[in-house]
Amino acid sequence: MHRWARLFSWTTLGGLLCGLVGPYGSFIANPISRICFWIAVFWVGTLILWPSVMGALRFAERRGLPILFAMAGATLAACLPLSLFAWVVCNLFWPVHASGIRPQEWYVLTLVLAAPATALALWFEHFRFADTHSYWVPRSFARPAIDTGGRLPDRLVELVLCLQMEDHHVRAYTAAGSSLYFAAMRDVVGQLGPRGLQVHRSWWVAQDAVAGWTGDARGVELDLTNGLKVPVARSRIAAIRAAGWLDRQAEAGRSALA
Image 1 (cartoon, rainbow, N blue to C red):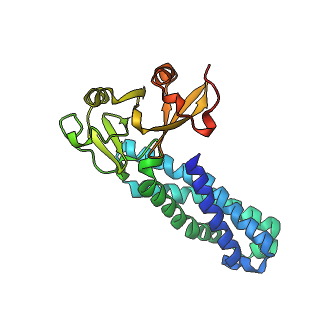
Image 2: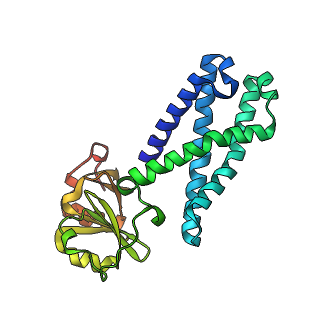
Image 3: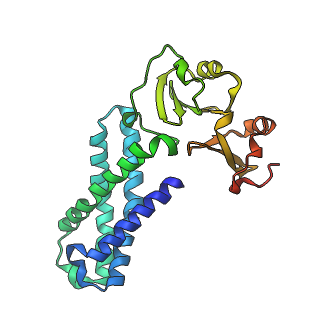
C-alpha cells in the first residue's frame, strides 16, 4: 500500500501540472475539466502501466531477457489501451478538438508522456525505495550476489536487521541498505544465533529491529526500524508472542490476537 500511495501521489501531481499547463492543445478547455481530465489520464495510466511493466520485469528476470527490452515492450503495449481511454474521454468532453487528432497521433502523444513518467517511477521505486520498502526486488536492479562461502561476513552478524530468502540466495538488510549473498537461509540463521527469530519461511528478523506490528488473528506483519513490513506465518505467531514482540504495538495493530 505504501508503494501505491506514493505512485498515486506523484501521478496526481503530474496530472495537476498538465492540467495547469494544458499540453496538446487542451489549454483551450475549461480549467476545472482540463485538470480532471489529466488527473484521470494519469491515474488510469498508473493502473495500466505499473502492473504491465512490473510483470514484464518479472518475466524478463525468469527468462534472462534484457531489462530495458522488457520495460520498453511493456510500455509500448500498455500505451495502446491508455491512448484509447484518453481518446474516449476527450471525445466525450471536447469532441471538436478530439476529431482533429488521428488515432496514431493519440498513441504517440500518450507515449511521449507515459514513457518518461514510467521510467521516473521505476527509478524512484527501485533505486531509492526498493531496499527498504518492497518485498520483491528484481535482481537486475540490485547489487550482484556476493559469494562468501555460504555465510555472512562477520562484520554484518551484529548489524543485520532481517534476512529475506530469494531463490538460492539470502538478502541481508542493515540500516544502510541490503546485499545479496550466495547462501542457504538455514545456514545464515544458524550463524546469527539467538538474536532473532525466523518468522516466515522466507524471512528472519532480529529482535532489536522490531518497532511494532499490524494485523489481527488472520495475519500479522512486523514493522521494522528500517521501514520494512515483514509478513509473519500463522504458525509463527505464537512464537513471536511468547518472545514479547507483540507487546510493541503499532497503532494499527492494537487488536488482540485470538
